[in-house]
Length: 99
Image 1 (tube, rainbow, N blue to C red):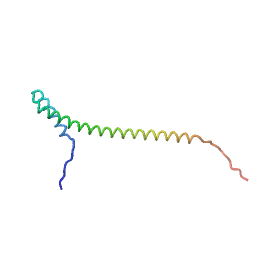
Image 2 (image 1 turned 135 degrees about the vertical axis):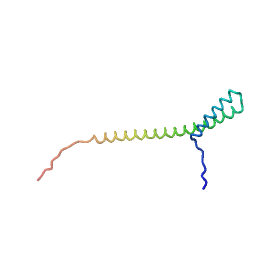
Image 3 (image 1 turned 30 degrees about the vertical axis):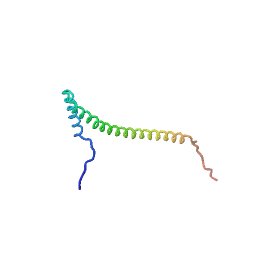
Image 4 (image 1 turned 90 degrees about the vertical axis):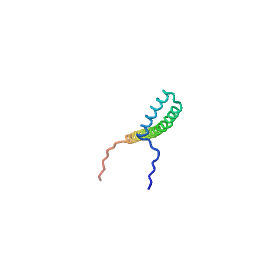
């Protein structure tokens, strides 16, 4: 049985982004254009994928919270309507006439 690892962003990815960022700064200061170009595009692509992943997660959480708030408001409105209908009654006392 072979276990294949799919795409994943973990601590190693963040560490590699930090290392590549310092490589980019060092190569830019020393005038190494090719290494600066490659490291810049690595940062853009991998950092963009991580930012896209976080953005999608945040959008899903925002949509879930929004749906939850809408559901809570609808339940509150339903409760107010139910209370208004139940308060519209007449309290009558009556006696049974015995013959």
